[in-house]
Image (cartoon, rainbow, N blue to C red; front, top):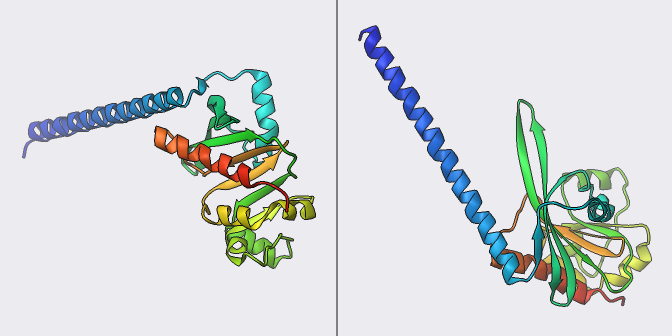
Length: 224
């Protein structure tokens, strides 16, 4: 095969690759637009106000709560807010860039914050991972709930006011949380915050279900 034929083949391959990349990029752009349109429609149906520019004062107030799970350093890409089932809710979308050696990965997730109408002690309720197991072996103190061993296997609960926290962790609350082992929960500045890592919600069904998680937990947060 002559050099001209090789050149022709190489040109065809290069053009094919360019076309494939363009097609993929267009498909991604179309999918992103469809998701964003779906989210905007969901917010309209839920009567939540949506914006992509968040003023400094609001951002600062949100950061004071996000800080408990070290989410305050992530970029806020959008905020929806308003009343949902008699509770004022904030639904944030956060973005962070993680370096993995020679490449970077963009992580996006939806985080909900709901101010509480009653005083609840500050705490974090975190799904267990290998680091928690190592910490336990090294003597790190963890709250346990003997009446609900399944909960204690799935979550780590921490906070300074241990007795007050235990008063709020009623059987109803523990059983509710047990069924949602993928969710990270926290209470700070008398505000409930929760999210599922690396998960963004777009459809009406997803957003409605996610907001209901918080409202249903709040309805159960009464001291024993």
